[in-house]
Length: 469
View (cartoon, rainbow, N blue to C red):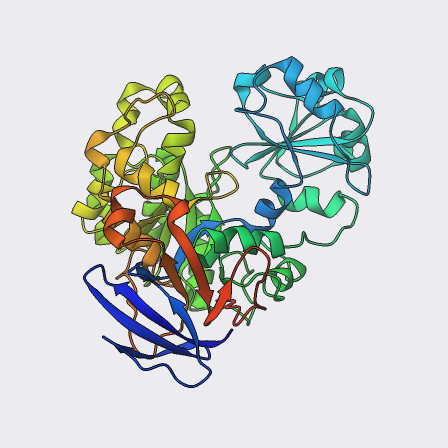
């Protein structure tokens, strides 16, 4: 269905109207519109009609692969025995490899090849830490990868020079040595996103190769895609360039300056992964040397000291953060981090008050994908055990929703509105906006339209326009 009349929809949370969609565009809005002969009608019954949501930071291929992987951490796996059972019962891929995800040290401490071999040594195993920054392989996998002769700086070695099985920030190196396979099918991922009301996403994985970029924009995914990880020199893109300041090893200051200048020289902003205080200080110092350009953004900003807020605002940076980590991992943060760091975790209100453009996002699959859960986390900042992390950083659900309504190329900017002439990327709720603000839940999502096409779990459109910017 590519042209129809949405009847009696609530717009902007304050008025009810009919909305006509022709092709991929909203063409008419009025208190009442006559149905054209043969025109299909979607009865909104007073449900809120909103612009589709945009998740401003996630990892699509990892999200698709996650669904085919073995859970290796909480809540499914919490003991060493449970980890062994999970690996023994896992289904290997077509090449005989077992892929695990979500590991955390609470299961069996700092995992390495020796521990993995005691749990499962029958076939190659690779397990990703829940942070996404670390892979751990067993002995069979280490031999298959040629880990002993590997030269990647992320290959951890013991005092005798032997690989421990831990690979830090070595995704590209690992991907190049695994058996060749096609990128994961994104059609089911597109269905999941559509059921949540998401019509656009920002793919935040760094250093994507052309095959991965083509897979993201080939049409299996109906959502519009903004790609951060395209390499410099790729003439197909003009969006921000992803730079990772890894907490496992910060880059040389001059090298960071050179990368920022190279991106700016191609008229691209930078999107810089910053989790630690040290990484943030390094980034701000580098940007003071290079200067900033519109669209420069900080990804995560997990720890932001209050004294750095004015510098971030003065530089005109925006922040894309993930408050749902507090709901998902907040108890771990409160236990493992010094109390002095707790007020600095995943700030929101203080960013807004400092005049910094900011928005929440998921970082899925490393954080919860559900945008409605993210909105609750931004408003409540409640851990799984019920403790509150940084009550002063709470923002209202309406403000958090505005971030998801900001344009893909303007995270934290003005929320999009439904007006004549806009592309019909829309979200229809079962009830009014006020209900969603009181009790944000994915259960409220009734219909998602992308380019004027109704999407559902069983019927998805081809990609109307895959933005590679």
